[in-house]
Image: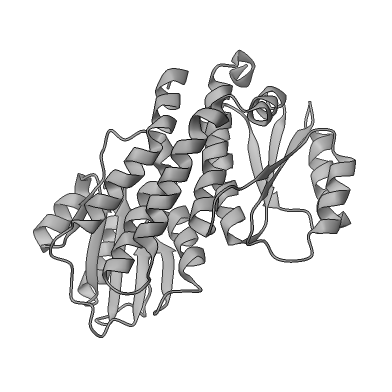
Length: 316
């Protein structure tokens, strides 16, 4: 992918989020969820990361347990379960099998996909499908998983306030994108990364899932080797990072992703890491609430990857 294509996909992210939210809000034929006592989210890759993030977003507000299990239908799924099946391409065989197993177990189903084998199966089963634009850029990423599921969960009465939250997050991202692409910190980080390993650290569920996305995009798009670790909590974590730094030819760049829902007790480890590493970048999430902060951290990582595409050292 060339730089312009990726940058354009980043810029289009807010509208893509709004479009997929509208598609979920307008979906007809939703199942009757009277008596549903659990929700399982099925999906792999980005959908699995998104499912885990959804658990974190919903755990304090949902009226029933919401669990992400990847391409595996748990034994507890039955006729009091709702399965939300997510696959952007629709061609992940494991996800299709898991969806079929959930249906056979008696669960109600809703599918989110651009088509493929999963789309064909959903049509044959008479299951409602939220369409994902197959031409949507890669920056849509986690949003393609998280946003429609949140809207569906609200429509079905399991959570509340999510449509407003999605709209506010999209508005916020729209204000941030162009600024990020010329942001001094983003550009200094992109300049420091080529030839080094990105050590991306975070704490808490939101940070963990944002860090996964950073590692994926820095490697896949930016051409930079990256690993994920927890945000340093003390000397042991810092020493682990320093060993990686010593083993790498040109050392590491420490990236610390910060957000409002972090656990307590991080200040000592973070301060020590700032002292011990030569290249340290601390990225603070913007926005209100876990969804906005997760998507903001994701967006910053995508902006760094977009800048890296223009740096020939990233692929040397």
